[in-house]
Image 1 (tube, rainbow, N blue to C red):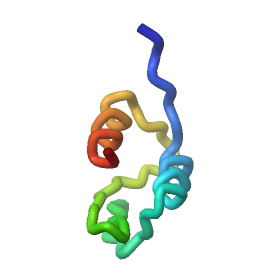
Image 2 (cartoon, rainbow, N blue to C red; image 1 turned 120 degrees about the vertical axis):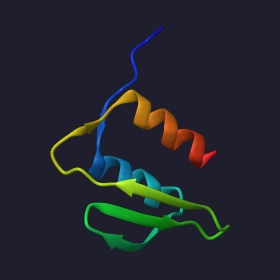
Image 3 (cartoon, one colour; image 1 turned 180 degrees about the vertical axis):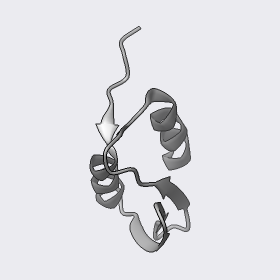
Amino acid sequence: MPRMPTITSAVMIEFLKSLGFRQTRQRGSHKFFRHSDGRRLLFRFIRVKTLDAASLIRYSKTLS
């Protein structure tokens, strides 16, 4: 099985925006996003780290 790619938090936020999510508010490192169809997403922004495979899988389930 191929390895999951790792990406930074900034790349993930740009990806969310390209899917139509917009940031509604922020509390500390937690950014809250909302889509026009009602979906909501909480994203923990970490500037220096990359997201691991478990985080990517969890967010992909939320986005679908």
